[in-house]
Image (cartoon, rainbow, N blue to C red; front, side, top):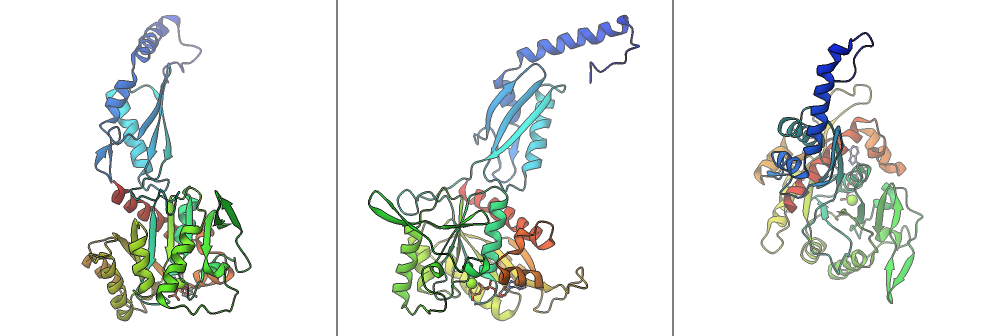
Length: 381
Ligand SMILES: Nc1ncnc2c1ncn2[C@@H]1O[C@H](COP(=O)(O)OP(=O)(O)OP(=O)(O)O)[C@@H](O)[C@H]1O
Ligand SMILES: [Mg+2]
């Protein structure tokens, strides 16, 4: 640093340094907010392909004698490009304004939304359906772990179990004994979602006694889900993850047509039979009468990792099927989650793997959460 000189430095030697310091101080006085904004207008948001100033992402600029600080408002707390944007901001200030200042870039986020939920599902910014054509491929596992990872990154997340005939979210989150409370607002009754692991959770499993089968015809089941979704008191939810039932039936059509869905994620396993059903689910979302954007494909049980050889990969169900499906629909393959005992175990125990901070599987779900949030920001832009 300029003024960090040794005690033996003579007064004469110090003079140029002090003069320099004075000029430097004077310069700082002259720096304006406009100059800072001009410099930051050279920083592009890599996903949205526009500069961060025109996107109104720069706030709270402060200039002191030796420090420039400002806040960048990201479109999601799960932004994978946080550090790239921070570095680009610092470089722009150094290059266009002054290279000697301490630069403090604070990061915050405001999740974007382009759906209108002002009356129905008030307080929900984005609705994401997790679907697959086939049963048992891991929709609920992916939905629960994705929701937890998003919440751990600082987003406000709701999880709605729409699998009315086989709700499994209460088991996955260890909530089998929970019964939600009702709450009246302006004469209308709302259900208060159960809070767990930082999520707001609602499932028909909370309302029907365990072990009792729901034997409703399609239209009645669809109506019940819509009512459950709308009557839940969601509190400022950035991402509402919906765990959909298997197939492409009445419930899917109702959810897609009656809810302003931001997008859908299709889960598949690598076998040909699962891929064939996943293709039908993906095709359903792209139908003219449905038109829900596909966020991407998740391949679950991609390969088997034996506990005694965790670095080994055995492609027991086949390889690259989901990659081809993603290419076919021109969407990203968001994740390839291995078949590992800890995932099944975590679900059975009600402690999803995404909560185990240092596990490679939690890292995989964190990555999935970042890519999902990134795709949503792009869809909303
Ligand atoms: N990657 C994985 N590794 C090991 N086990 C897994 C994995 N993914 C899911 N499972 C297990 O597979 C079973 C089915 O998963 P899950 O219930 O999530 O599937 P689903 O698609 O939601 O099923 P359904 O169609 O019945 O709703 C569960 O026991 C779950 O713990
Ligand atoms: Mg399920």
